[in-house]
Length: 501
Length: 116
Image 1 (cartoon, rainbow over the protein chains, first blue to last red):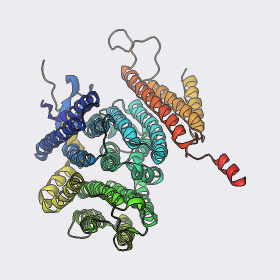
Image 2: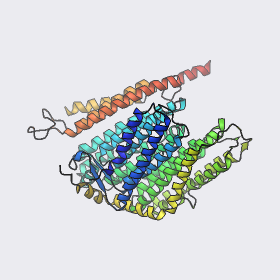
Image 3: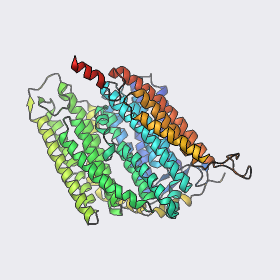
Image 4: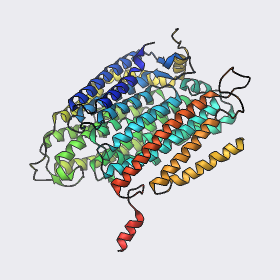
């Protein structure tokens, strides 16, 4: 049993503790440790992905308990991919902090590491209750990160975010409780196996549990009736935190894929879940598109594009076949990176425009309008989904994964219309920012190198999605196969033998 | 016993929900606490209610399921930490925003201001 699987949880945890103790030392030390840890995490998660690429499902039993009694960590293709995705974002966020978002003794770097620990834990765990625990670790770090920097807007957005998520946590326990009471296990593989042979009188209550859990994950991933906290929260946080938050909605999507896709959808309650998932997905896309069109600030606009992408991804979950899972995770990589890129870009634009910030109104010309404009155009092409960038391929894959029938009509029209709305709205934003301008201000600060480094890194990642599309899609194909064949997961978990003492 | 516990959970949940929907932060925090209690009790009863039996397998003829107890313990600790955090946050919001309304604006005061 190799310890590689637990490294993505332990490494940030230890780094965070170390950083708390070193909080009062100089910025160079805290930044250095944080960056080294982020790079090491990138290396480890890359080896994890390489390991899973061969089709191995690595199981790690904590404290060497026998399956299914203890808590297990499972690294299949999906989990490893998500951990790698997170690690890449962390590197970008930590580097972007160097421009001065972190100060001495404010623990920003430590909080980032705690968040990373929670997110990685949520991705790797193979136990439903443990998923709840890692959700809480992730959330409490995110509460503090959201409030980092202080101010009225953050206090207000933070209060809503925290209260909503606390209600969400209570519902999570409720759902987990029902599942345990009726099925008698919390191990995901064990659950998936037992769900296929349910006594029919339990179906109704388990459908309720499945929908309660859908609500909890929906709150994290911001699906339709539960997304109203997101635009305010995401637009008020500082830029590096917004980069990290780009993964938070994906944790919700991941959980739906893992818990609903693996446990509930193949069983008798799957029908009920699907009945809800389709309309929610379409309506979320519509609501997001309206928000994109109506936004008056660039950051709010970006936040609404997240909601559009969440709707798109929920639709792919509802289709639930190998092709849609392949497309979903290709699109998820793209969507996470483009969101992170746009938030960093919005921060750069806001500082360049002085008091106008990121409001979409006439303002002073940016000093570096050429270079910022080029990044802006590249980001828009990717966001809207025009060739040759990754958004195009993601959307084509998603569109071609629908089997046909009514679902195809709805899904195609929703995705294409939402893209059109995004195109109109963001082009208007761009022309306002770059063409409807007054005399440039001399006082605008230069763009620091670390900001460029993060921006270029994220653009490079999106280009690599296109250039390396072949191996990435190959990996995603295997991922889809693993997700559709839950027996593989079950065999890996129950074929695991504890290390003899 | 089952009916009593069911009623207790229902009352706690109902009161909690009512308080969560209030507009001031203090009742909302109280509501969250009550809801957490209800949910913890619910999770506890999911191991089925047993009398006079230890949560240890093979120690006596009957035993009660130890897992929900472990889960509840975890949930209580997490819930406690979260409540502590939200209390501090509510105080901070009260200081930053000047009132204890969850939306940060006091509608009654705003109306008074407009009428003046």
